[in-house]
Image (cartoon, rainbow, N blue to C red; front, side, top):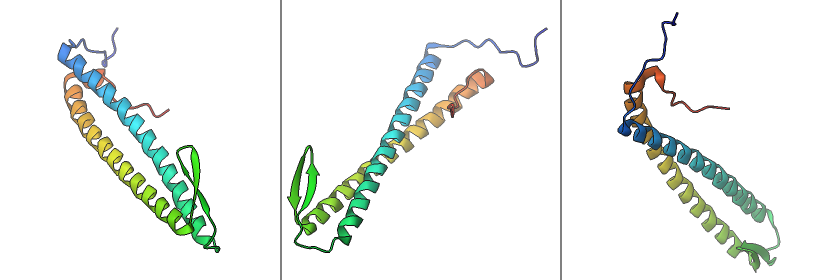
Length: 131
């Protein structure tokens, strides 16, 4: 005896498989981008903390070591502050660009979900596992 919610036999065409594969690739890419955004936000927070600490420094003649690649170069407090501000602005732009890419991927995923659910109904699960 079969239950009333038995799985229907649905023919999967090559085009359907391409859409499923595109959905999977975009979902993975979106996850990677979100991880990258979180890492950049953490770096931005570190730069903001460094900038705040630098403002508390009372000795204006103090040379501040600033890391460029693998090397630390000493600069005046003002130069270091300017470099921190430039680095923060660059990171903010990178985060904004990544968020725009995530948004465009979400739009593509939304379209694919509509198309795939229209054809396969309950026979396909396109929801991300939150585990």
